[in-house]
Length: 280
Image 1 (tube, rainbow, N blue to C red):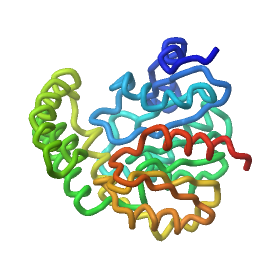
Image 2 (image 1 turned 135 degrees about the horizontal axis):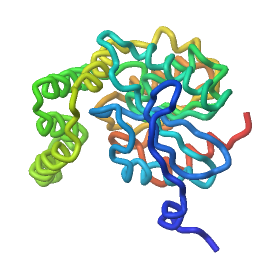
Image 3 (image 1 turned 180 degrees about the horizontal axis):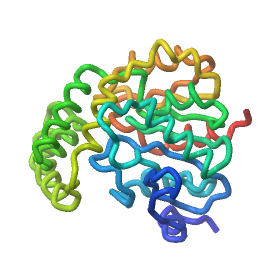
């Protein structure tokens, strides 16, 4: 009898916490036979359990094969911390907790960090999926994230959420007209549910990604990599995705027409699973 997605979610084991040695926050999802680490995208606070339901739904297609460890950056990052510093934190965590190479998916900002990781720590990666990320942000996305960080510093969390969520929506047409009031209402609600005590987690990460320019280091990556994204991703251009894949020896790229950020859907899920399950 085939197990439905809902049954799979209900039967999976889920926990949240901080790894004892590294203090890196994690959400553990599922009980599959192999570990898979997800470097999470930009969040407003480095705390486990945030939007856990959405996270479980996004990665439910992996739960038959894997136990997922969705990780954020450690809390209380100091000013001037870089994406490479965050990558090194992850490397120490994977050595401590897994003792060797694992499959890794990097989503958006997590994908930016994953590029540093696979270049600097190839012994800790079996395969890497760069999910809706590239060697650099677009200029428009860079400016947007800096504006979000400024709103956070001013304590204007609803405005910060609205800016970020709005940037991910269609730029015009009737869908935009319908979404605008819903986005603002949702942003207000989320800002009440999740108001960080300190904006530094978000601000330090945004500042670090603003300095993210990895194109000249892509050639150093020597492990199997899949770059997968939507062709209409507002944070990156098709050219940036193509440059990323072309710069990594042997990398594979899949772009989905008319898809935004992040890439998702049945075909995306099948493509990621096929890449991860293929023999080395």
